[in-house]
Image 1: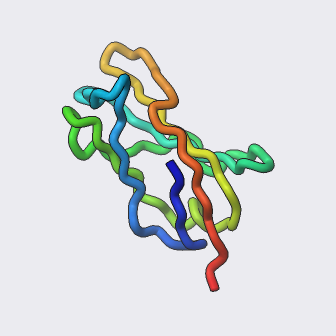
Image 2: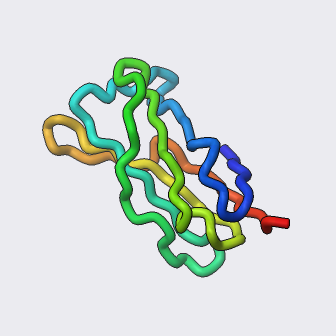
Amino acid sequence: MSIKIVQNDSRPPLEFSLTQDGAPVNLTGCTVKFYMKNATTGSIKINGVACTVTDAVKGKCRYSWTGSDTDTVGTYLGEVEVTFGDGKIQTGFKQLSIIIRDDI
């Protein structure tokens, strides 16, 4: 999945649905975090910031950008980590390519 956003923008939020084997992941009682790193340098831009679960049964989440998330032009890789109610962690439901383009 590829996301494009303009430098310094904080809208629209990043919204996604988590699925496994074609079925929604039930996020009831789960914590969802978002990570993003520069695709070229590997430097971490977002290090495990909490997402909002908008529909737990359907696996729907939202990450709301902050000003520093989109302040640097470049191509980034993003992924989602879920901590389930039993404490077990699974990463990689969503792998994203995020392009932040220059603000004209």
